[in-house]
Length: 129
Image 1 (cartoon, rainbow, N blue to C red):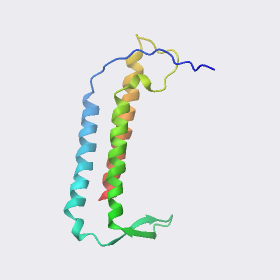
Image 2 (tube, one colour; image 1 turned 180 degrees about the horizontal axis):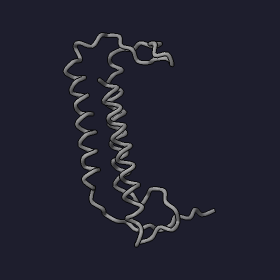
Image 3 (cartoon, rainbow, N blue to C red; image 1 turned 60 degrees about the vertical axis):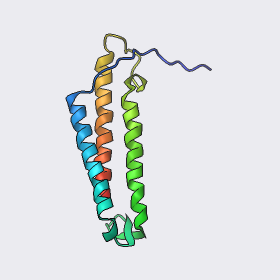
C-alpha cells in the first residue's frame, strides 16, 4: 500500500521579529545558566538532589556530574526544533493547503514550534540553576 504524501509548496519565509526575540530570550537564558553552572561547579556539593516525589521531598540523590545531562538534553531539543522550524512544509496540515494559503498555515505552525522550543530552553535553564 502506497502512502499518499500531498505536494506542499516550499516557501522561504523570513523569521518574524517575535521569533527572533523569543530565540534571543531562550538562548541568552540557556547559555547564562550553563555559564552559571560552570562558574559555580566547585561550590556544588558532591551529592545533589536529582528527583523529587509528589510531595516535593527528595527521593533520589546523585552525583553533581548528572547536572551535565540537562544542558545536553536542552541543546538536543534546541537543535532538533530549530531544524524543524526551517521546514514548515513538512508539518502536519489539512489537505486544503495550496500556493495561495500556504503562508497562512506555515507561519502559525512555525511560531508555535518556536515558542515551544524557547519555553523548553527556559525550563532547562531554570532546572540547571
